[in-house]
Every structure is written in C-alpha cells, then in structure tokens.
Length: 601
Image (cartoon, rainbow, N blue to C red; front, top):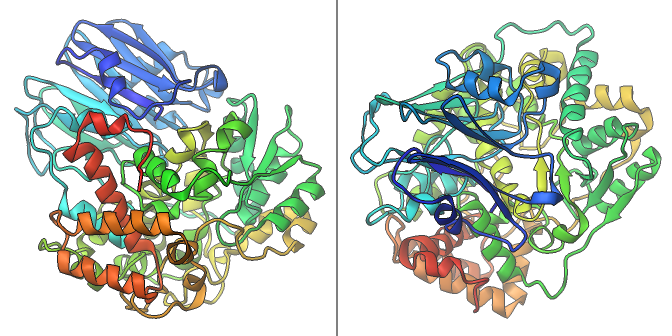
C-alpha cells in the first residue's frame, strides 16, 4: 500500500520499513533520514505527482501523505506548516484541510508529532517502544526505541514480540464493520482518530486539535452556504489532481459532486462501477449525459477471481474493515489501475443527518448511534466471542470522544468518527491502485454540523429503518445546481455489494432467512454457486474458530448456517474471514506470507 512510514529512533532504514508494506511494482519511495529519525512516503509517483511531500529543514524532518488541499489559499510554505505542526500551539493544524496524514520529527530533541485530517480520511497507526508505559490518560514515556508509525499495521507488527489480536477490536469489527477509536486489531499498536495530534516527547499524549463550532445556523440561506463551502472544498481537492476521475455510482451525493465539477477545467471524467444503494449504472449514465460529462462504465475482469480480490482488500485495509463493504470489490482490486490515475470522491456524507436530526433533547445519542449504524446486534457479537467483551463499550466510547452540545451535534460527530473507521478506511483498497481524494474540509464539516433541523429531516421517528427518508438538504442543493438532476430516478445499486446491515430494532443474529435488502447480498449468492470461493471461506472460518478471542463453537454454528443458506447477511462472515486472513499473514507467517501474491484454494 502507498502510505506514510517512519520512526524517531531504532535504526531501521526506510527501505526496510517500506519492505514491510504491501507493494506494487510501480510504487516509489521518497524519504528523509537525519540521525536516528526517518520519515517517508510510499507513493504512486508520476501517476499522482501532486500528492505527498517530504520536507527537511530547521532540525525537522516531515512528510505529508496526501494533500493539504487549501495550502495555496492559506499561502503557507511547507516549512511554515511543519514548524507549525511541531509548535505547541494547535493553530496551524486547525487551519489545514485534508485529505492527509502527516508526521514531523524534531531531530534535535527526538520529539515526534503525528496528525490526521479533520475527517480521518487516511489511517495512521503508531507503536511506542517496548519500554513504554502508557497510562489511561495518555501520559507515559517513549522508551528506548522511540515511536514508529505507518499507514499500515505490517511495519509496526513485525517489530513486536508475540503480537496478539485485540478482543475489543474484533468486537468492533463485528458490531460496526470496522475497528473504531484508537484501537487496532493488534494489542500495543494504536490508531489515530480524525482531527487528532499525537505528541511523543517526554511523554505520550493525544489531543483533538479541531472541532466544529457549537452554535447552529439559521435556516434562511443555509443551502446556499452549504453549497458554497462544498464548492470550495471540492475545487480545492480537484486542483491537486491533474488527471482525475470522479467515483460515480449515480447516487445523490455523487450527482451533486458531478454537477459542481462539470464546469471546472480541466474536465473531470466520471467512473461508474456499480455502487452503493441509491445509485446504479443507468442513473449514472443519465446524469452524466445531462451534465455533458464523459462517463466510463467499468466492469470487473472475469479472470480476476473474487478470492484474489478479497485477499488484496484485506491486505490493503489490514483487516480493519469487513471486506464485504468495499464497493465494486473485484473491479477496484484489479481493473481500476488501468482506468484512472486519481479518483475523487464527492463526500457530501449526509447519511447521518437524517437520523441525527430526529433526536430530541432527551434522546440517547449512544442508543441512536447503535440502532442506526450497527451491522450486527450486540447479542450476536457477544455470542461470537469467547472473551468477556461488551460490544456496547465501543458505542459509549465513540459518543464520549465526540463533541458536546445538542444531541444531533454529538451524533453527527460520532457518526463521522465511525465513518472514518469504516467507509473512509475501506478506500485504502482503491488507494492501493490509484491516488484518491476525499473531502476533509473544516468549513464544510463545520457547516454540516451546524445544519438547521429543517434541512436534516422532516417528521421521522429515530426507530425508522436505516436509509429511510433523505435529508432535505440533498434536494435543496440538487435543485439549485440543476432541477432535472433531482428528478432522475435512482434504481437499486448496481453490482456493488450490500453493506449487510441489519434493520434497526431487528435483533436477528443473521440466522433467519434472507429478507428485505439483505436478500440481495451478492456474497451469499456467490458462496452458494462458486466452489473456489466457498472453499476459501470455509477454510478461513475453520481457522478463525481456533483463534482467540473468537468462540469456536459459535463460528462452527455460523458456518453451518451459511452452508444451509440460513444467513441473512454475509457481514459477520466477511469480518471473521478478514481477521483470519490478516492474522495468518502477519501474526503467524510473518513477512514471507506478505510476499505471496494471492491465496490459492
């Protein structure tokens, strides 16, 4: 995978750290080494020349993985940015818009500063030396080996003695489809949440450097303000990608993005390869024709088997996301590389606005987040784990880590942090093949968080099914851009996979016959008809049942129900098989397994 790598001490060459990353033959390594400190970026090179930077000066070495999309607008040099990051103040960081992950090492003192963008568009993991003692309040000591950091878990796991799976992380993966908060699949390796700065100096500390404003906005003129901030954010990221394509399932958010980019120069192509609910190929083609935008209808290579696609997706995401949630999985792990250099995502990210807008002053944010965002019910997660873990702890921690204020403000922020751990993290699969741009704009996130209730939702109970209704802001914006856009119907999603989410309030453990939207789960159908895929899944389920903290009997029951066609969702199977596949490569077999191009079953 492309990504950020480095450490403050320890002596490893950048080449050694890069070797532990998942690679492609066209990747290039750019880095800086000064004394024991080393930072670098593994990148797509000439395919995405405007992304990433390595900087050295004033006793600092630093790297940005991605782009600071508003750097020209701020008129900041890279030296000013890295000096600002290393400063105790949060002022410079708070002004930067992403998508990026960055690192800065002060080679005079050994102090390390890491940061993620405001949306958490790119993962950044870190591990403090074996001598570290880290307290619950984030304080501690860096230890003799300093701190190592990377956009993948591999370089950090390789240096640990007897690494083990984190039970709560596996619980998160089953509950939400992704590992949330500061945890990773491996005990002792941490993840940096969105809008967070880590400082390792005399101690180890993290702080949130930016949060949306508390005060709301008046309904009058709100759609124009939102659209203005959105236009600016999308234009900023688009200008950092010379040869760009818009990921375009044809749903409401991608239509807004296509309309905004339609009159920009150079032009932006649209790329349709199936997609999530709310869009399809026919709708995408109609919208592109309406806007006069070139549209490529991409298809997977029939010779690229799903088994190999899953192996590639798990490698790209470190098993931190259930692979079944990756859009157009077989295409993005193979054909995407030949069709695009840089992929732009529209990222209006308004899905949480509907259910969050229905929250009253006395409603539980944690309860609403669980009902509307979970993939499996907590009871089903408990059954699949042998460890004494309460899955609902993850819900409470997400809410506690989110901004205070009215319930809808807290809920939207919590949903954004969850989105960083699931949808945005899954884009690493695309980023393995091409450059990517997601929106991580402070003004846009701030305006969205302050959305008036009238534009969040009409009358709708919080217990209503996920996806029912749509926030009025979508239609208001679409009508301002082009009234005919809002009138083009969207059918069911194309060949993209279902997210496998259960209906809120349905405490099924996935064992009942397929009903509703889960009935279209393509992986359940594929398991029933594809011998190689079935053997692959069965082998991984058999293995994960013997791996702590998973309950072997519960996994055996899950496998039996899968074979009998009684599961309504493939989501728990995807989560567990991803854990097992990743653990075999990194916990059991080490670096030798990572060099295998695929899994033969």
